[in-house]
Length: 196
Image (cartoon, rainbow, N blue to C red):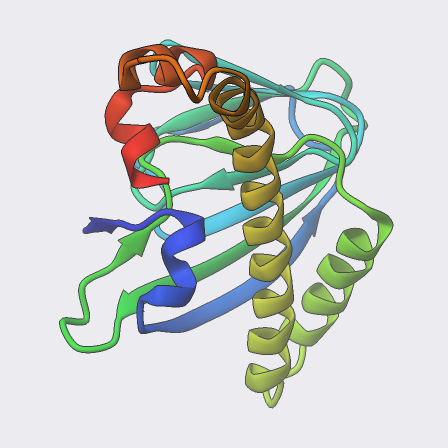
């Protein structure tokens, strides 16, 4: 399995298959995926609150929260209210030539803390398309729109993290400074900063 960040998706040639969407309502209080997910996917919380637990990490979601769930992870979902509802989007992503499976991150990752309304509409359209056998192209088109939104959100997050670095360079361009200093300003490692 290959890890290829969301922002690298456009640069990599890939095949997307097994696209499906469901809406889950009245989520059980505690749901555990002990065998690991069999697909890549997104989860969009539409109602209530949820807590995801993966190894030692906890992610709290509120309505509108969009989270990426990579294939193979074992996690649990806790909903304090039985009224939690969400869309679950599943898909398989493979490199075109090697057919090796691709994931975006190696752990559950919040893509958007508060999704715009069109994302809710897009997930509902994808759910409806899943019920029709001849809707493969439609589901692919809808998933591509969702991925495009996720990529734009990722670029926006990168821009927000990088802006203190750019400001620092603009203010101190005549001085000597290190990559280590710049990386600390962006709250990332030097290697992460170099990749940007």
